Image (cartoon, rainbow, N blue to C red; front, side, top):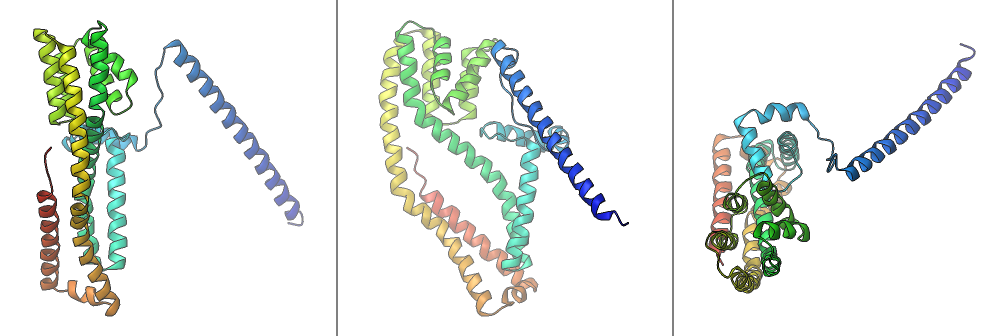
Length: 312
């Protein structure tokens, strides 16, 4: 044991040398992989390399269940780069975080309510992402119809015009049109491909565009004139929707502020009388009253949102 300092120094140096060698091997291997991917991309053998997926085992098992398939379909229309397994793990982690954080701030019973609300919020998040993607696509419709009108006026077929539009437009329109172009390339009819697009992103504007394109492909006619008129109409609707959204923004903030005020009062009560929320939720009557109060806040929030919803 007299040589313990020297032995420690030797092991430390050896560890450092091995660490340097490991970093060098890893960096060189990563560089070789990137070079190989670049060469194969240029030769057309692969088109893209996605990120490494997490929780693959859970994802494989989840995809075989009905819930996993429904989650996969919902994620597919949101444009999120997530797998069902990743989504479930993130939601469960969020629920646990809500339970512990809210339970620590208020009371453990409120943590349970927050976890239940978070379970609903996970599904609401996917629906919100779908609506957000649909809104972004609707905002690109005037530009899309303009591109299609220019392409058809130049003598291009509608299939070729859709492919050209998918290359020129940004996402989400570009990505959705690429899906339509891929479906057309493998033998799907124009009606089916555009119909699936309307199902993925439901909106009246897109239904009008799809109907116009389908009828023009079936019966012929002045498709360029129809697309020009549709472009002007969509531009006007876009401006109207923006004005309506600006007018209703205060009402939407009010709908969110009402339940926040209730939570603020709970914090105030708990600060004034420490442990009051624990005593209140420790009895059955208090738990029932708390659930009824939160249900009324939820009803008020949904009622305000419902009254402020205007279809343009």
